[in-house]
Length: 303
Image (cartoon, rainbow, N blue to C red; front, top):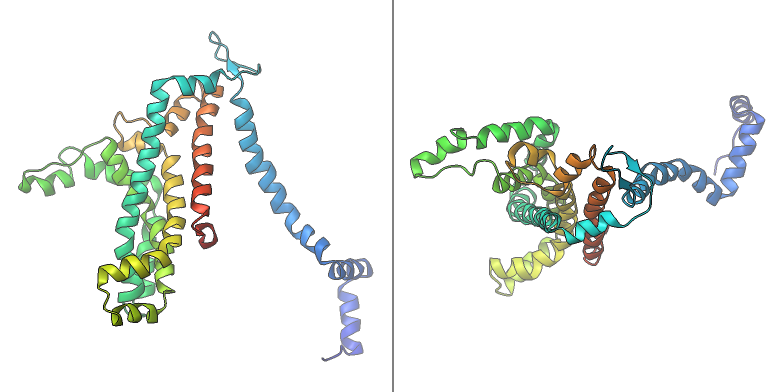
C-alpha cells in the first residue's frame, strides 16, 4: 500500500479545507450516515411527489361535489366508491379496461417471443445489436405521431382497407379492436427486451441436453425454455399491462365510442373531481394486485 508524499498531502490539504476534510472523514467512518445522506433526496422526492400525490388522490376520492356549482365540497363520504360498485356502467368499463390490458399483454407475449428468440439465439452476434436497435426505434418516435399514423392506417379507405380489399376483407375501423391493435404496437418493445435478455442468458447446454434426450422442439420449449424465461415474460407484462390499463389517448384517437377508465377520469376531472379521483384509484388497485401476483414468479427481480 503506497503512502502519500508530503507534497501530495499538502496539495490535498490546500484543495480540501479543514471542515470539508473532517466531514469527509466522519462520513467515511459512518457508512450508514453516508448512505442516509445519499438516499435522503431521492426518498423525499418519492414520498412527496409520488406517494404524496397518490395519497392526495385517494383522500380526494372521499369528497363530494356540489351538484349546482360543480365545486368540490370537502365533506367525507363514501358515495363515490358506492357509485362505482353499484353502477353497471362503471363496472362494465372497469372490466373492459382490464380485458383490454390483458389482451394487449397476451398479444405482446405471443408476438415478442419468436422475435426475441431470433434476435437472441438465431441471429449472428454481429447482427444482434442492430436488431435490438431496430426494436427500440419505434420508442424514439413521438407517441402521438405513432397513434395518428395508425388512425390513418385504420381509416375507412386507408392503407389497411386497400391491402385487404383484394381478399374481400376490410380493416377493423375504429373501436375496441383498433385500440388493442395500436396498444400492442406501442408497448411491444417493452415485452421483447426482457425476453431477449433472458433468452440470451439461456445456457446452450440445456438445449443440447434436451435434444440429446430425444425431446422435440415443442417439448424443449415447454419444459426447458419457457420455465426459465417465464420471469422475463412476467416482467415485460408488468409494463404492457400497466401502460395499457392507464392509457386514454389511444382510445380517444382510434377507439371510436369505446370508453376505458382513463377516458372516464379525463371526462370527469373538470365536472366531478372526487368521482374522477375514485375512478383513478381503480387502476392503482388493479396494478397493486397484479404486482402481488407477478411477484411470486420472481419477475420483479428481472425488472
